[in-house]
Each structure stands twice: as structure tokens, then as C-alpha cells.
Amino acid sequence: MRPARSYVDNPKWRRQHGWRTAVWQGMASLGLTGWHGLPVSRQWVEIHRRKMPMRHLDPAFEKFRIVQMSDLHYSPMVWKRYLEQFVHWVNDFQPDLVVVTGDLITGGYFWSGRVAHILKHIKAKHGVVCTLGNHDYSMFGKRMPNHGLNRASHLEAALEKAGLIVLRNEPLRIHHNGSKTPLTLVGLDDEWTGAIDADKGFAGVGEDEPVICLNHNPANAESLLPYPWQWMLSGHTHGRQLAGRLRRPYTHGYYAVADRHLYVNRGLSYGQRRKRWCRPEISIFRLRCDSKVHNPAIDPAFDGKPVSAACEA
Ligand SMILES: [Fe+2]
Image (tube, rainbow, N blue to C red):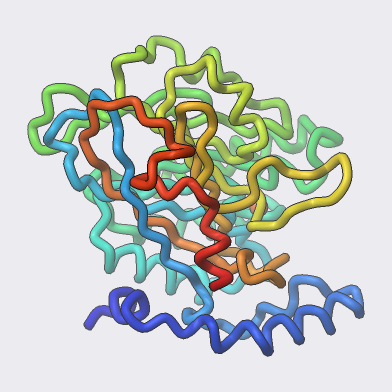
């Protein structure tokens, strides 16, 4: 049996939470947050599966498989072999499309080419689509805009040179198995650094298209409701909630946002994963043709609760 399939059938992550939490808390008390995760373990990763019903979807896309990865944060703290194992797993799932929703690196030009070299080994029928996150610009957010812009452009060039698709405030339309109408992806640029331009990204995208929006930071999901997306795939949070004025509206899992669907992937990097619902994650979506406008909050078919309840069980 393939490793990823075997893992899905026999998850072993529960065994690890006791000692991982203890080690994490010990390291955090010494100011060494993040280093707790260094032992490589595929048993700790959640593979989350979810149906993705969409209106206006061409029947040729029925059961089209999208795999989402996020927040790889390739850096000295995330080992190459740790990320490479996920590439093998993703290939096991035979995806039609892979999306990577930002924070591919944490810092430094050096890592751009290296993360592209890892991701170029992903095999997906319609390729790998990447959007950028705040760390792809700068470790210092808005304080270093020029430096950040250069680094994001350097990363974009490295990814495209490796054959990956990068969407920065632009749509991508995909045809599949002779479909008459396409599936539309809109990749938005990072909000924290001010690079997002939703008007540009959704230019020419109609209400009658099945649209998936890739948006690194889900905090702005409600402000993007005027645009015609049905699903939004995000990352950024690593599953964590923050306190006070930094409190996050969306931390992990599925959310109904008005009549839209938001999924927040918890990412793959080592850092900040003390809580059970902060486990690293790969998400797998299967498209479904659906003619109705649902109310996701009350429709049990959508499982409107965040996934944390299931993870904590
Ligand atoms: Fe991140």
C-alpha cells in the first residue's frame, strides 16, 4: 500500500501529542519555540479530505482532485527531507491540481531556488499553482517594502523557472477532459505587505464562473465578499489563535463566510504547533457539481464546524 494511503487508514498522530506537547512547552520556556519539531515524523501530519461543491461547474470537473499545501517556510529550521516527504505523499494522491497558498520560504534569497527545486517534483495533471505570503516578501512585513518586493520577485522567477505557476493578483482558467467551460482560480497577492489587489485579480471574472480564490491570509475574507468567489483556500495561521487586538477570526479548518466557503490550511512548517489543532496538514478537495446556493452554516453536508472538534476527539 502506498505510504500516504496507509497513513490515512492508520493514523498514528495521537500517540505523539503527549510527548510533543511536553517537549514544546519545555523548549518554549527556554525561548526556543519552534525547535521542538526537529524530529522528522510523518505520523504527525493530518491529511484532511473534503468535498468541494461548486455552482456553474462543468460536469467534466466532477471529482477533480485539488491538493492544498501551505506555509512550508523553507529555511534553516525546516529540513529538506521533511518537505520532500510531503512531495512524495502529494504525488501518491494523484492530484489533478496542486495549490500552494503562500509562505513558501521564511527569509533569504538563497531559499527561493531551493524551494522551487523541491516543488518541481510534484506531479499534477494541471500543474502546481503558487501564491505568495507575507514571509515570501519579508520577515519584517511592511517595514521593508522595497527589499520585500525584490525578494518576492526573485521567488516568483525561481518558481516559474522550475515550471510552476505563480498567481499574483490574476486569474487562471483551467479546462479538463474536454470541458466546455473552465474552472477559474484567482490567486491574490499578500495582504500584510499591501501587495493584494483584488480588483486586478478578479478583473473579467464573472458571477457565472466557478471560482476558487487563493488568498494567503484569511483575515480579510469578509472584505472580499463583493468579489465572485465560491471557495477561498488560505493558510498563514498555522492553526494558532492570537490574543487581544490580534485575535484572528479564522484560524483553521472550514468556515462558512456568508454564503461562501473558506478553508484555512494549517501549513507544514515546524514552528508554533503546540496545540492539537496546530498539527501540520495537507488538504485534499474533490470537486462536485452543485446547482444550489447552500447556507453552509446549517447544511450538514458542509460540516460547517471548524475541524478542531474532530481533531481534538
Ligand atoms: Fe506562515
